[in-house]
Image (cartoon, rainbow, N blue to C red; front, side):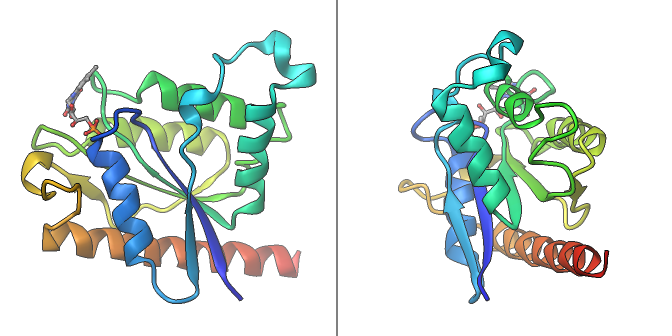
Length: 189
Ligand SMILES: Cc1cc2nc3c(=O)[nH]c(=O)nc-3n(C[C@H](O)[C@H](O)[C@H](O)COP(=O)(O)O)c2cc1C
């Protein structure tokens, strides 16, 4: 059976190294693992609790994609030491309605690329906090901090740094383990 992972980037710009990281993950996925790239977070409206009763179609589609996936993989930049607003907005939509979030119990892995040497470590910690509250099953290791991003990708946006490629592959493997464990627990419940 194929393991289905939904992956998205926390950046909207075309030449984003985080979007490139998501593309690299798709290429590095082992046999039996399918990574679908979702590129719609920029089309989601600002979260508005008044819309919760009848959510916009883009929100419903985003939630359905998460619900249908066995796991979620996110690559995000760090903006001002934290999560980009566009990504937090998407997660806020996915977190509702309260008690019925599609992220509850969902295996999740996070990674990130930055221009600094820290490789989004602070944004990833903030993301882990969000997922902790949402009772998502966040993979802890390996930590994928792609620092000094300008030297890790070629001009076409391919991840060429071998250490980073191995870390991304390792993170996918860890996410698959988390997915299998989660499915086992569900089957025995
Ligand atoms: C609004 C903004 C805030 C940023 N804040 C940080 C930061 O806190 N830490 C950091 O390491 N880099 C920061 N950067 C630089 C990013 O690491 C760099 O622009 C990176 O390439 C963004 O990811 P992307 O290539 O996926 O767009 C910031 C960039 C922007 C545009």
